[in-house]
Image (cartoon, rainbow, N blue to C red; front, side, top):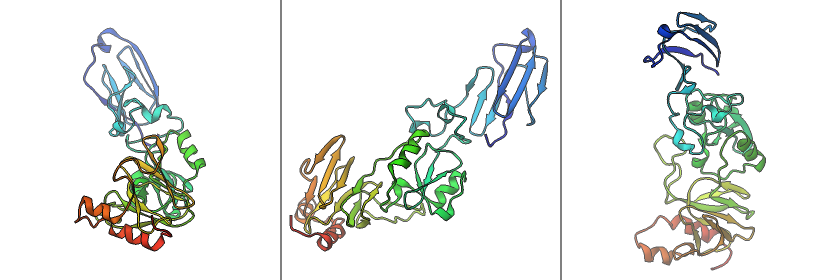
Length: 304
C-alpha cells in the first residue's frame, strides 16, 4: 500500500469487549495491533491510532476495513463497471500484485505505437490510456495520466496494440477491448464517428460526427464508428450498425461482425454499402455523411 492506515472509532458492536473481555489480534496491511481483554491496546503500528474498547475500523483511502468482522464497510465507487467482481473485493483479490488507493479505475498505459509502457498509480484493471512515451512515468497518478494521455475509447487515430500486450493486460486482471475497425487493407481508410469525440477533455470535440478521419494501414480503431470509406468503392461507404465491428480486407472489402454474427455484408436495409441517394431518401437535410463520401470518391477504385 502507498497510504498509511488510520484507525478511527465506529459505533459500538453488540459485543462489549470491556464487559466480557476478549483477546483480539489484527495483523493487516502496514502492521499489527492487539487488544487484550478490552483493557490494554498495544501499538505496534507506527501510524497514529485511535481506538474504542468495542470495535475498530481502519481507513485505506476510499475504504474502511472493519477488523472485528473482517470485512470492508463500503463498495468501490466504480464497482458497477466490474459486475464479475465482488463490490467489496480489494484489488480483484490480488493485493500482492495490485494496489488501488481510491477504488477507481486502474489503467495500463501504451504509447502511440501501441507498445506497453506500464501502469498508472492504480494498476491494470481500467481502460487503456494512450500517451506519449516522454510523458509517462511508472506509477504516475491516475488523474495525471488521464490528463496527459487519452483513453483508448476516445483515441481517434488508428493504433496497433499487439496480442502480446493484450495478453499481459488480461493476465493482470485488465479487460481486453475490441476495436470497432480493423484496417487490414494496406491502405488508409476513413471513418465517420458515431458521435462527437472530445479526446482531450477540453469540452471541444476533436472528432466531429460530420467529419471523415483517417485510419492508417494495418491499425485498429477503438472509438465508436458510424461508417467507413475504403479503397474498394468510389461511390459507396459502409454504414455500421450500433454494436457492430468491421474488418477491412486487403481488397478494401468489409467483413461485418454484429453481436457474434460474422461475415455479414448487408445485414438489413440501411446497413452495409450505401450511397448518397440512400442517405437523402432517409433525410434530405442530413449532410453529416458528405465528408465521408468525398473521401470515398478520392480513394475508391471502382463503382459499386
